[in-house]
Structures are given as structure tokens and as C-alpha cells.
Image (cartoon, rainbow, N blue to C red; front, side, top):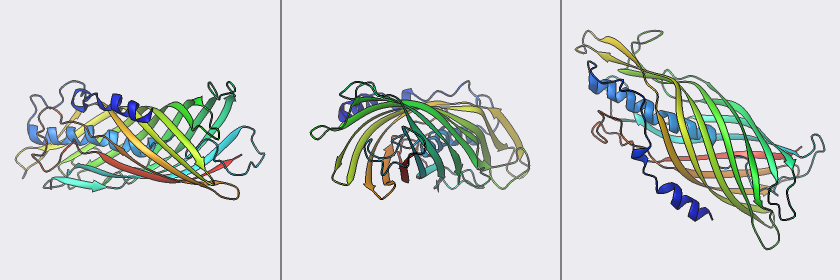
Length: 312
């Protein structure tokens, strides 16, 4: 089931999914720097978005929750630390091609059972909520808030002979975010470009998992639709010796697919979960030649997390 979903998701070409709104660099001075800043925005939004979203919306296998604390009926909670290896165009002065970052998100999440479904588990419904912060978005970056809400519907309850399967969907907002530093608001920095934006993400996940003794194993496939909010780019025009700051509104919409695995282990009152995943790459914006500046927008993003999950 996971393989089939991944094939369908992968069949949509990334190049057809990148949709900058308008043409913020058309007719602008220093169009190379404008395109560089726009490419940074288009690549940064999905990269930071997947750090907030990750793979499995509730870590571990459904049945691997640890001991019930009898505090909140039918609710489990998790504390997660996520990170990703993010590659973006360098916006320093002078640009050095590619820059690598490791943004980190720390999030609290809950899953509350609203409906038990049929005997096979089909139709069981959970409410998913999460909140946290994202840090490490680069020089001049900000610590951003992460807020999410969604639901998960069971397709099959785990049994002795069969794995459990579920389909989930979530909406998240991350922001405000900043990458790069230039002569823009609020002050002049040392770089040649800057991006300011938020990220809205709708994510869909298909997961299949099963316990093998005290260990839970889960695999999944995902699809995310990322959209920037209040996107703005800035870059230095002029001759480089007397730079002039230029700004433009710019929003992008991009779809990516991902695959991930979870390994969980029951502890006394919780479950410890590790996740590793990979998200597909994107495409170049108009005016930016892939690889010409030492950065390839088509490269994927490796992400991972560690988590503790407790049945409240």
C-alpha cells in the first residue's frame, strides 16, 4: 500500500508544482540577485515546512503507547525534537553557491480518540493537535511558532496477523521566518539578499505499522502542499559599491512527496520513537538556472526526529 502511494505521489513532476505568484523579478534591476533571492524563498519554504511537519503525525505504532496514566481518557501526548539537513542558495556577500543549515523544531502533540470505528478498526477517528517552535533558520533568522490541527482515520486495526494502517491529514502554520540578511527592513546587513515569509502546509500521510514484541515498526508515504504567506524578498541592486536595496512581494506554492520510517520501543510509562525520512526536491524559478550558482533546487531533504509518547 505504501509503495503504491509513493509511486502515485512521485508521478507528479516537481517542476510542474512550483507556482510563484506574479513575476517579482521581471523588469527589475540586478535580476540575477532578484532570482537568487526568489529561489531562496522557493526552496526555504518547503525545507523549513518539513522540519515542522516531519513524517508520522503521531510518533510510533498505534498500539505502542506505554502505560496509561489515567489523566485524560483516550488521549496520548508526545514530545518531539525534529531536525533536517537543509540546503539553500547562499545569500552572503559574495554568494558562495550553497549553504547548509540544520533547523530544529521542538513540538508537543496530542491525539484524542473521537470515534472507535468498526470491529476491524476501520473508521476510528482521532483529533490531532500540535504546537511548538522552530529555530535555526540561518543568519538573521527568527524563532518561529508552529501550530497544527488535523485528524487521522484508521483503515485497519493492528492484530496478531495484520498490521495497522491509517490515513491522516493536517494543516500547519509556521512563522514568521527569515533567511538571509541584506539592506532591508530593519537594518543593513552583510549579505546580498533576504527572505521574510510564513509557511502554510497541508499534509497527507499514509502509514502502516506493526509491533514485533516490544518494538514497533512503521513505514509511511506523505504528500505536502506548501504555500508561503506574506512572502517578501529583498536584494541589493546597484553596482555593488553603492548598493541600493530593492524589495518585492513574492509568494510560492509547491508540492512535495516524502517517505519515512519509525522505530519505537516500549518503556515503563512511555514509548521512545526514532524517525528518519526523505522529502523530494523542487525546481528552479524563472530566471534561476539550476546549478549555475552552485545550488541545485532538485536535491531532496533528509529529516529525522526523536520523540517520547505517553498515554495520558
